[in-house]
Length: 266
Image (cartoon, rainbow, N blue to C red; front, side, top):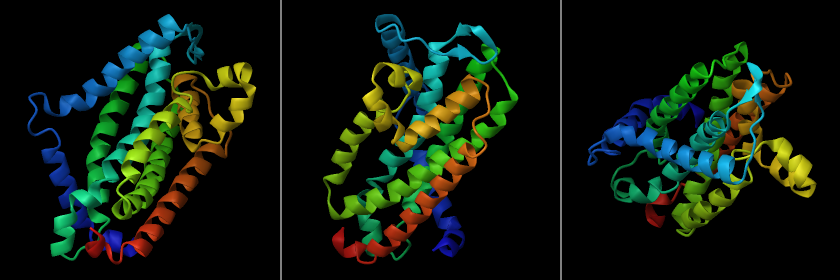
């Protein structure tokens, strides 16, 4: 199936072009919404959790006397959005392309990967805003060279999960609604709105639960690299990329196994 990814690359890009051109076609602001939505969430969460709940971000890597909850929060949000964006966009792709899949013979994973390529544009925009925020804060370091590898790991991980959940949703339509609920809970079990050390100190019994969440590792590693300007343990980034690649490969295998009679199911 890996060979098929190369063979049908033109088809995948065609689906990507369709998604890219139609996503915000009827809106006046177009792709600006891809930035306005996360920035609006950033403003709300930053105000509530830093001013109301008084959650303190760790010191900035460039100056231990300064902190920035907004920068800490947005680092986690960018990483999380890369995961949740691909997942939510993919899960309904098979059902939305049901008519096409019934009439034309082509790999069913093509619209999923095409939609994900379109989503990469939004991920890139958010990353650019994040970089600009840290440059403004004069919080720049050599550790940043590891950040793209972490994002690639997140994308592979998300795509692998999306492939498995999309085929499950094709068989059982309730899956997409269950995933929405689970993602909402998982968001708060990921150290985006709070430092991981805060859980370890305040709620020790929950620390193991948060640590068992794979997204905790991706988000926390981005905090270390981008915010704290430190290098994680040597095995962390290669491990995250390898884990993402393994989940992606597993997703492809599961999708291939259960998509043989997809036309009849849809």
